[in-house]
Length: 495
Image (tube, rainbow, N blue to C red; front, side, top):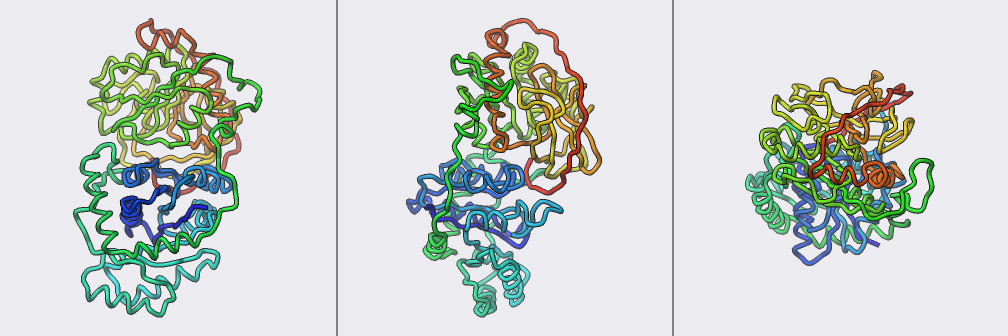
């Protein structure tokens, strides 16, 4: 059993991240081993959670991974911890558009049998707060609302009025926090600036949050509420099982051999990744080595596969472009047929250029910033056989970007989507799979095993040698298949 509590809010902007991160940091400083979690696909908040706890921030997404994996993934991440703090997404009852409660904070709280603490922005109300809390407490009797934390309280008198109003609600007040500009994190076009880009300032902010929460919240009462959650009846997710170890699948067998090096992009420009991806690659037999495309001029020694996840390459386009030796190494690795999996930011990095700055040139496409934000959950079907999946494989994913790639798909597209009009997107050519779609590999048994298998069989020693020197080979593309009957819409909060 792990004590657990969900931090939710009536709407976005109420202060969930502030309170959840502050609680994580305060309890960690008090000597507890705290497991940090985030409902939904967001990559940025888990970075602050990891800074607060010293443990990987993990996502719990009932849409991308399915409701059945939420509990096992939670149990895996929280193993050995004293307390788990789960930050919600959007408003408590907001989930995937048109899908009822699916993927909402309330849905995840019910799946985990966890009590909820509601963070209320009290800056423009007094007695009305009681009506608001009463509505949230009574809307779904299966959701246990265990307390309220009042955020952005203006004064002692304001706090007194709020507490008086809530006395008759039956929901205890577990904390009251004043406005504190010094703990605010800066934002830009896709949300908070990630920890990787402002680590020194983020450390100070998290420390200030911990002190603010310690002074303004009843930590003992919150811990008691979390301990009242009771045992979670289920087994934890295991990376070896998720990677499909020991499970035969046609075309997916991993050849016997050494542990191939899989290079994973990191650093400030590529800070978005799910912790389970690295665990799955390792369980599938790879040696995972993280490198920073902003500073490293070579791929890790012996690289036989490359994973480039999400992030903000548009912010660092000049620096990425200036690192010509690495751009050349990536292009050569891809030309040699080595497996390359690129999501969103990775797609931009593989393009010919980004906002006019030369990139790796692996794809015959150009990328630029756009006015419109593309956002939402997606149901997808693999259009072409690739290093990640066979054609016809269905997965769920998420898009969140304010960039455009032209053309949006290659001769062999990666995915078929309907959002709501049918379309194909992404690129599959030789060993490259590049797409805007973020997926969670825990939901796709065998994805990591297939990728590692291709590292051993597809790239081979040739790819390893080309990563450091070698000649540039030509690239090719297969035929495109139909998009299939794919449904999907939704909402989310991360790229």
